[in-house]
Every structure is written in structure tokens, then in C-alpha cells.
Image (cartoon, rainbow, N blue to C red; front, side):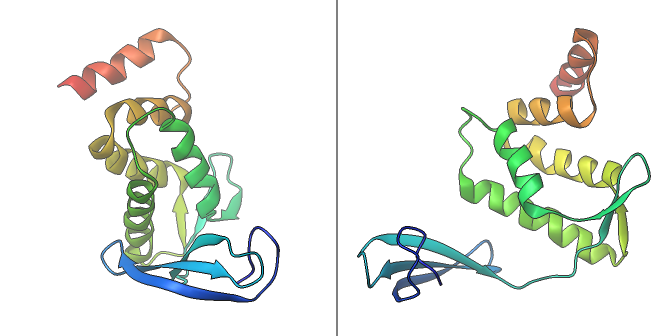
Length: 149
């Protein structure tokens, strides 16, 4: 593993732990060159389906793109990075369990919202506003009313 600080490949593992129900191995490493410590995560690579966009385009599932959107929705919210990783793991497991080669972005978005609603309601509304492309305050209020019930 390359050190993110100095770029050398010489490092040693200080600690390894299973996280996220045993699906991810978290490793603390120390660079032999600069002495700085960093964390890496190791997971089994799963074949995820293609995502069908609303305009019909197909593109590979991009975990980092979805994670960036979730992070934006969770800005200044009490949601940990581990909680977001767990949420992504649940969504990815859902996709692979379906056994389909393609999943629509609408279905994927609904699944993310389902998981996010349980995690943080403010982040849920923020993510929903982008995912559902709210155009006015009324759409926000409708979503808040449904969330309240």
C-alpha cells in the first residue's frame, strides 16, 4: 500500500479489525519512511450492475460518486464516516442480491433514501431534494409532511 504522505511502498500494519459486519477489514498502517500513520479499508470486490440513468444512458456504478453525494447531504450532521460506509454496504448488498445486470437510477435512489431516512432525517431531505429535483418550497414541504407522519 502506497503511503498517502510520501508515496513510498514501505509500511507495516499496526492493527487490523473487521468492521461493518465483517465485510470490511480496517487496517492501521505506519509508513517506514516518514513514520506517519494512515488507515486503509479492504473489501471483497463485488460485481455491481450498470446504472440506467433517467435519459437512458448506462454507466458503471460509482461508489465514490454516491459517497460524495451522501457526504454533501450529511454536512454538519452527526453522521459518522463509518455509518455512511455501512449505508453504502447495505445498498451495494441490495444491488448484488437482486442478481440483475442493470438497475435504474430511480430504484437505486429510492433504496439510498430508504436507508438514509433511518440514519438522519435532515440528510434524508437534503439528499431527496437533489435526487427528486425539487423545484419549489411546496415540494420540500410535501416531503417534510411525509417524513413527519
